[in-house]
Image (cartoon, rainbow, N blue to C red):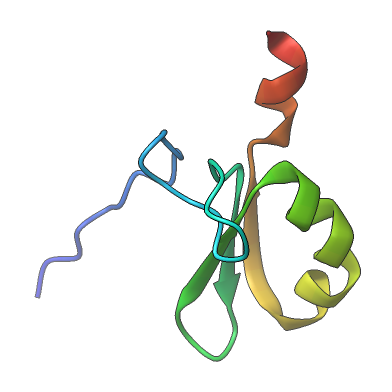
Length: 66
């Protein structure tokens, strides 16, 4: 079986699961699945997210490059 590599880069299509704003953080859950968050909600929930994540893809640094 061939495994397909997914590009983890977030785009304007990716939306925050809390408020619908553009997502800058993708959280891959240990239990399976994923969640996406805007920078605001990522900061608000970061401590809990690190407890349940197998991997966190963080692009919040893109906000300071503008």
